[in-house]
Amino acid sequence: MSASTTNGTLQPAAAADPGKSWLRRGKDGLTAVSLTIYALVTLYPLIWLFISAFKTNEEFYASPFGLPAKWSLENFTRAWEVADMGTAFVNSFIVTMLALVITLLLGALTAYVLSRFQFKGKVLTMGVFMLGLLIPIHSTLVPLFIVMNKVNILDSYAALILPYTAFELPLAIFICVAYMNTFPKEIEEAAMIDGTGYWGIFLRMMLPLSLPALSTIGILAFLRYWNDFAFALVFINSPELKTLPLALSVFATGYSTDYKLTMAAMAIAVIPTIIIYLIFQEQIMKGMTAGSVKG
Image (cartoon, rainbow, N blue to C red; front, side, top):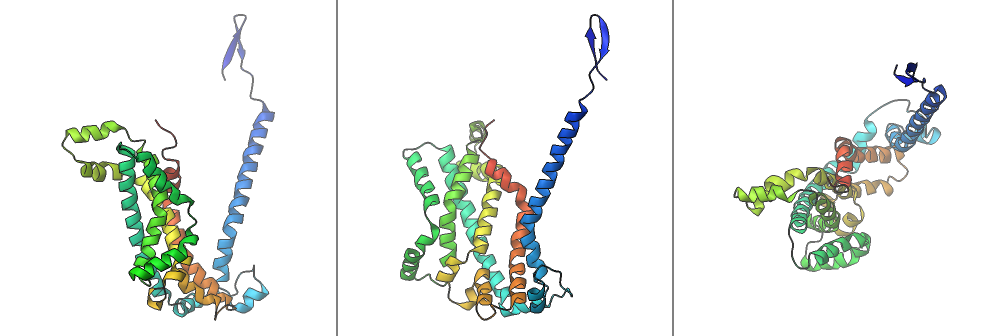
C-alpha cells in the first residue's frame, strides 16, 4: 500500500472507494450482457436457417422455431441436385475469382499512380473515379444490356466480370489511395537509388505493404460478386452459365412451398461467405481504418 507524508509523518493512502469499484463492475457487466444479447439477436436468423434446413415441411409449419426431430442431410443432397448447385458453384467461383483479380490489380495500379505521382489533372482524375461511387448500379442494367448485345458478349462470363470490376473499382481505388498515402517517400527514393524501377517498387514494395487494404477490398468485392443476382438474371440465359443466386431462384417457382429444400439450398450457398468472412474479418477493420491516422 502506498503512503503519503503529512507534517513529517507517514500516513496510509486512502483505500479505493468500494462504491466506485462496484459501479465500474456493474457497468462492465451491463456492457457484456448487452453485447451478448446483440450478438444472439444478430446470429439467430443464421442459426434458424441452418436448423430449418434439417426439418421436414410438416415440422417447419408445426414448429418453425423448434428443433428437428431427426437431423438428416437428405434435404441438402436433394437441394443440391434440384438446383444443379455443383455447376452454379463452379460458375460463381470462376466469375468471382476473375473479377476479383482484375479489380485488385487495376485498383492497386491506379492507386499507386494517384498516390505517388504528381501530374496535371490528378485531382480531376481522382474525382472522376469517385463519381463512380454515386452511380446507382441497377440503373445501368438497360444501357449495359444494349452495349453488351451490340458487342456480342451477353450470356458469357465477360458479361458479369466486366461490370463487376467497373463498379467495384471506385471503392478499391479510394481505399488503396488512402492507404498508400501513408507510406513515406523515403522508401521509394532508397529503392530508386539502388536501381529499382517503378514496376519493381510497385511489385516488391507497394503491393506487400498494401496487403491490409487489398484484403479489405477483396473481402467486400467477394461478398458482392458471390451474392449478385440482378446482373446475372439480366445478362445470363444459359443454364450451364448460371451462377449460384440464379440457381437458388428455382426454389421461388416450382418449389416455392417446399421450405425444407429452400432452407437447405440457402444454407449451402451462405457457407462460403461465412468461411471467408471469419478468416479475414480482422483485415476488414485494418483496411477500412488504414490511412485515417498518419504517423
